[in-house]
Image (cartoon, rainbow, N blue to C red; front, side, top):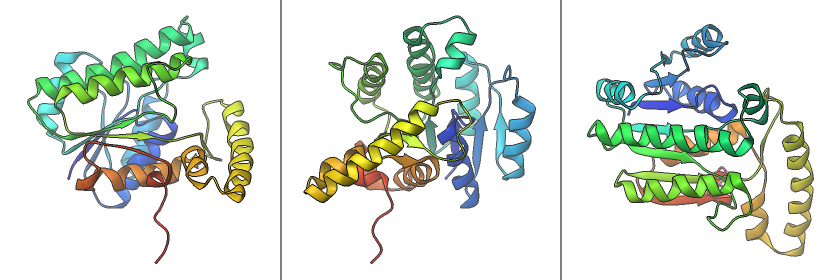
Length: 237
């Protein structure tokens, strides 16, 4: 099964490419052609035996690429950061709408226009809700609603904090929050609220990537929203 990974240069995306390539699966990593690190990413991904694609973010161009590649799986792992938003003169809300929503929906439109039915694996977030007071979570809910209405096979993943030593996108508060949250969730687990602890338990990019790939290849995960224990390795037997 071939995979097309969009958001491949992100913290989770690069790990998904690594996991897929490590399994010997055909994988194409999408890299923005205007990225200042495009050559670096190309070298990194090709060293993993992954292909690299730099199709422009235009519906017609992306549609043509998807028709050519005809992937069985599309991983939509897009997201922006405060640093990038500031660098492009956008507020966080504007950045969420342009990148997290706009580009993800463009990718979804291209999948439909190409006449394909790959599994669309979307990286959302725990707490996603249209009624949320968080602009970030509202944008995730917007994409989830569009995905459900699209007719495209999908799997939605809603992890909690994503942290780890590999992080290089300048999110120290998220790393610190993950540490604090892990301690709180451990205490809750001791008190007996195991489901709540599992839902909000922090994860790492490596563990999440493995869970996303595992779900992508699992027929029973189609049409499902995965969170909590579903995004962690199953207990040993």
